[in-house]
Image (tube, rainbow, N blue to C red; front, side, top):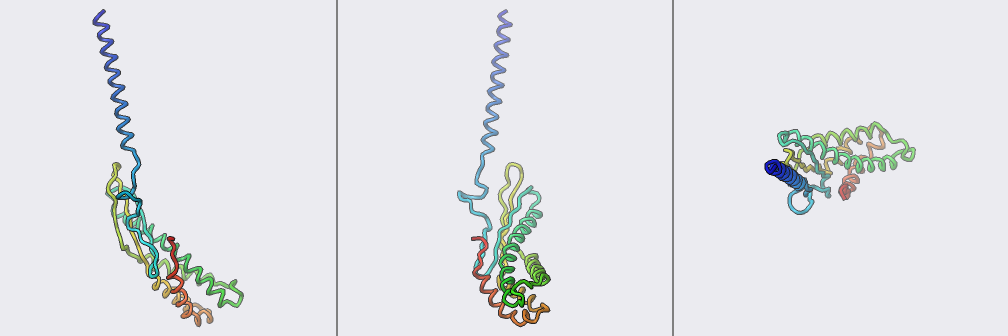
Length: 198
């Protein structure tokens, strides 16, 4: 009987130790899942942060994934930055072009030539697709083997205003052709003041 009681006590003790060890593992797992700052240091500053200024449109591109795919992540981050900068450029330039058409159009701005606007978007995308980065950084590898890639890109506002004005001057509309140089100067000045990230 004493042997049987001793066996039961040993079994109960072993079971209690097993439960205690399972609880301890859960605490370790929970402490590993704490959320931390996604960027280095104590602040949430974005690596490769670039901003619009008088001379440049700027954007920061992001991508994340497996550390073994650094080259693909770099391309994805560049594409992300190009998409952001293209949207800002199109917003700024199309507003200027619409104002220009309102000034030169005989129909009070309703005769905007969609072909010309499409051509301007093609010019913008041609410039955007040829951009390279001015900053490139990778984060550390996390516990799952993933990293983040950050790319900063800039595009000259003068390059954009010249390319858009040249595109307008090739238009079949005589009054646009005559006022393209005036438009070039106005667009260059207005783009200097544009700050898409503020």
